[in-house]
Image (cartoon, rainbow, N blue to C red; front, side, top):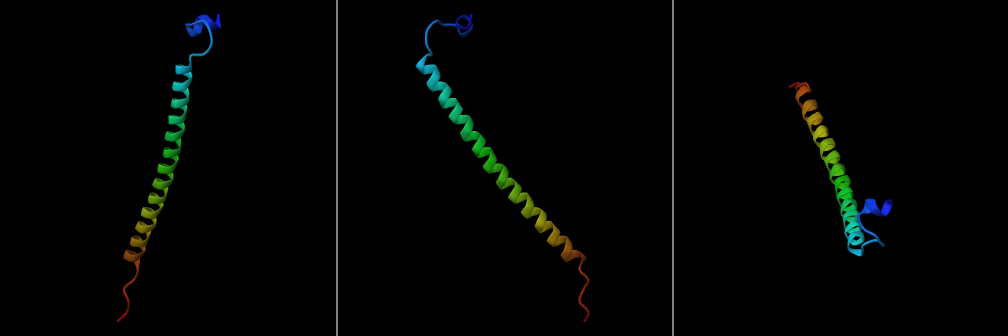
Length: 66
């Protein structure tokens, strides 16, 4: 029954296995790129948040006495 579900009789098709390996490698590459981009985005978000807090503190500071 398993052979009927696969659609062919015999061993695994080498082209199919090669394509499967290629696709698995592509998924791994995309997952690692996604992780890198998310880390970069988190760093940029933190830097922007830090900059906006610095600007907020500068606006709230009291003027110097003269």
